[in-house]
Length: 141
Image 1: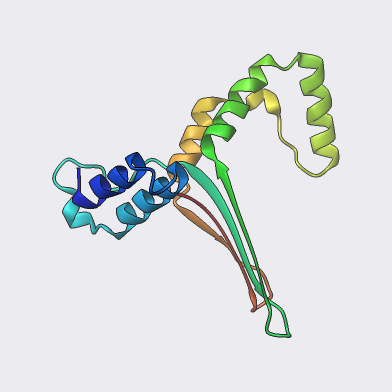
Image 2 (image 1 turned 135 degrees about the horizontal axis):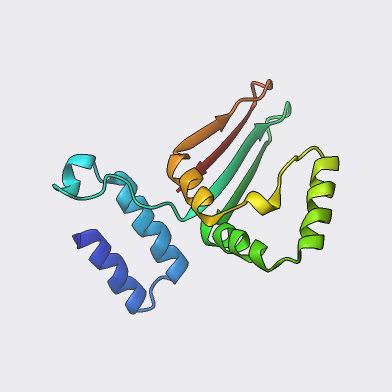
């Protein structure tokens, strides 16, 4: 265990920081560590915990909007597992409504293994939009 991680856990144990703050600090420490310090046999990349969507937009008056949505991947995993509990008629109706809305997704085809494969391959996706003052990033962390 690194010295920084130990200090963060001590601050958490002493009640100086919350569990959320400790998690953010540990994630920041892990991002700052160069790959060469990971050691032989260590994974070069931690398993992602969140799907994050960040929108930065500057308006003409000098103001700036920022949207930062953090979705726990455990929530997505649980949702995929819960589809097995949905009655077949309800899935058919949901598929029809998704198709009408322009999302031709078959909920019968969602499998937990597919979600894990998607998460493993989603390093970072940058969504380009035509406005030079706006950027959107979608990524796992």
